[in-house]
Structure formats: structure tokens, C-alpha cells
Image (cartoon, rainbow over all chains, first blue to last red; front, side):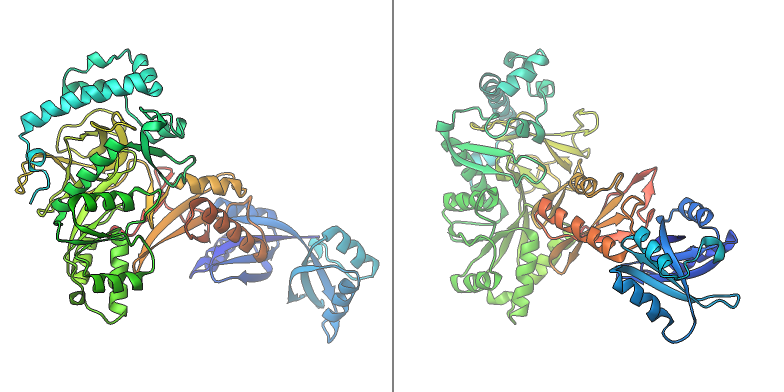
Length: 139
Length: 432
């Protein structure tokens, strides 16, 4: 499983930059991110190279941060790639809380980050079905 | 114009003699009829005979709202229930309500003081008094009503609500005096405007407003919009209800009816009595109450005592308009709100150390309460749905507890300014 950082942000100018500034200052590399927002607040979700360190420095700076387990799945970067993975989840009744995708580097395919209801079960099923689940080192 | 010139213009010396005599009687009544007072006085090794001058007032114990609560419902009454003809009570938003009772004599006293207050504010027996204070457990409606009848004015017991109908009645029945909360007066002015009417379409000349703190700016606004003279009236149910103090035409403070209530200003921290003119907490001892006499009741209202003679000729000292509270109680749409209630709800919602701030605004004529809550790690979720659920739960719980609608906004930690490690809990934008 991968470690994702979630940061609570108020929906106002400059809050996102406040996070990226600190991460830049401490030389932390953002691999993937997504921002979920409502009219009042947002939740910034980040996959970084050093989640523990990033958690500490953000927390020290006064942000509300949380580390959540997520599943990273690598899939072929071609039509139907995501559909294949989602079909497996659907047939196994895995309910997705949220997901976001990014293009892999180093000649890899596309990577999709999933947060599902039952993480353990989802990991098992995906591995059984021969779907490539990424370890932190592989990202 | 006076209602009771003899007492309203009584020479100070005579007044003080009367006060001392009545104080002694009150202390005796408390000591012999109220177990609570006997107990605390015995703890202080104090007997009724120890009160020999007005200065001895200092020796007496304070009474707090908590004392009334601890003796809920009738424990502080100095007469058997068979002597009580009326019961009022507070809304009880911070726990048990406080219950107050009146003998027939108390109702007579209250009516007399309300009649005085109405006359002092500019009413007479030819007036039509449109009483839009709520009738019920709240003392406002019935308090004004009995005073208006005692005065001999024509009182319209309209109570609150249905503003368009109120305006129609004011117009058709020729109301000349409006009694209600200042915020409701502003709302009425707004609706009059919406209806395409002008203040001149009504016969209103004076408004007597209370039960809520309000500013000089608000007075100007009401006076302009309704084309009336706006008078501030003060009272609290624990003392008697409306009619404890009221402004005269000079509008330079509220005359406190000193032949019935003995005012003191104290330092709320030390409990020491402050010299006249200094600002502090208003403490009132009832001098004539039968059912619920109170010794040195801590009103928690902040004011100064004005001892200079008033051009109106009344000899009773004045208190300045209430400038705040020694506790952090807020009055929002007539409802008492304590920040501790909000804290309690947040603790129950799963907050370990809630950081929050109350923002009170006046939008148009309505007071609004927004609670800003910092999102701490133990309630934070990476799912929008769960945070929205949290916001919703807090809002729901607050509304159930407080009885008014509340806006809730989740904010980042440390957004709420902390001064010397302590957060500023309340921002009241209504005062401007």
C-alpha cells in the first residue's frame, strides 16, 4: 500500500501555495496530487517521496494533516486500461471512495490511486487477479 | 411628567433612610424564610442585626444565577406557593432554567414600576401601547402589559410575530407607543418600507426597547427609520423583569428605581465594591420583593453608576447603558448563548480540545451566529463526505442545544487568533 498525505485547506487564496512552498523548501517531491473541494474547504491529497517527513513538517507548520493508506495500480496507458481495473473492482463489490490518476514516468503505464472501503480485501483481490499493485519503492 | 413624583423625586437622604429600612426587612425575610440564605449567612457568621447601615450591604453574600439553579425550581422562594400568583422562567439554555415567582404584592410593585418606566419614557394614559414583547414565560410581555394597564393607557397585547399584521394594526388602531426588542423595531421599520409605507403613516411617537443590548448607532437608526424617540429600558427576571431601570427624556443613562432596588457596582474579579463612576458589574439587591427576594444579585452586566443629579428631576441614580457582560453570554435574537455551550457540543462531537470562535453579525435586522471550528487531526478525514457530515452534525447539535439557527464553518488550525495563548472566543460585529 502507498502512504497518502491529506491536508485540510480552507477554500481561499494562497492556501495551496502555503503547502507547496513548505514542501519545496524541504526538498520533498510531489508525485501525484488531487484536490477535493466544497464551497468552504478543500482536502489536498498528495503522494510524495517522503510521506513521514512531509507529515512532520506540515504538522509542525500548523496544518491538519493525516496519513492514509491508498492503493496505487499501474495499468496500460491505452484505451480500456482503467476500465479493465474498474471492472474487476465492480465484479468483486469493492466500493471506491475516491480515485485520481497520473501518468507514470520511466516508460511506465498510467498510475491510478484508489481509496476504497475495505483496503485489505481490495489488495488481496487485485493481486489475485494479477493486477499490478505498486509498492512505495516502485513509485 | 412623573408617575409617582413622591418617590421618583424623593430627596436622597429620605431615600437612603427608606432603603436601609427596606434592606433590613429584606435581609430578615431572606434569613428566616430561605434556607439557602440562612446557610450562607451562618457560614459568614452574619445575622440580620449586623446590617445597621447601607454600608453594611458589603457584608452580605452575593447571589448568582447558579444559586437559583441549585435551588430549582422553588428553593429560593421566601413564601409558600399558596402566596405565589405568577411564575415566570428563563429559557434555561445553559442547564436548568431559573424560575421566578411573584406574590400579589410583587405584581403590584412590578406594575407600579413599569407604569413609572413607561411615563419616564414618554407614555401617558392617552397613549395606545403596542406591546410586541413576547407574552409567556418571558417577563417582557406581561411585565409591560400590567404596567400599561396600571398607567391607564390602552394596551394592545399583540406579542411577537406576523409583522405585516402588526403594522396594519398599528396603522388602523393608531398605536402611539411601541414596546419590543430593538432588533424587532428595526425589522418592523424595514417591513414598513417594503410595504411602501412611510413612518408618517403611523402615529408612533415613542419606542421603549429592551431585553437586548443595543448601541447608540442603533438608536439613531431606529429613530430615523420609525420617526420616533427611542428609549432604553432594562430589567431581568431574577430581579423582577422589565422596569428595573429606564431612560428619561434626557437619555443620559437609565434611572434605576432605587426605592425598590439597591444598586452596586463591583469589581467582578475581586467582588470589591467600586466607587461611584467606575465601571464594573452591576449588582442589585431587591428591597421590596416578597416571593423571591435577592441579596446582591450578580447581573453579569457591565455598567457605571451615574450619581450626578439629572435634569429630569428624578433623584434615583442612573446606570449607563449596558456595555457588556462579565461572563461571555451573548444575546442573539433574544436567546442567551454562552460559548461554553458551544464547547460542550464540540466535545461531544469528538473534539479533544476544540478551538472555535463565534461570529455574531447583524444581517439586515437579523442577528446571525456563525461558529468557526478548527479542524483538528482527530476529527479530520480525507473524505469530503465525512467532513461535511461532521459540519452537519455540529450544526444540528448546536441548533438543538441553543434553539436558534447556527452557521458552521470548518477552518484550518491557527486561523483563530490566539492572544497570550488564549483564543478570542467571540467576535460581535453588532456593536459597530
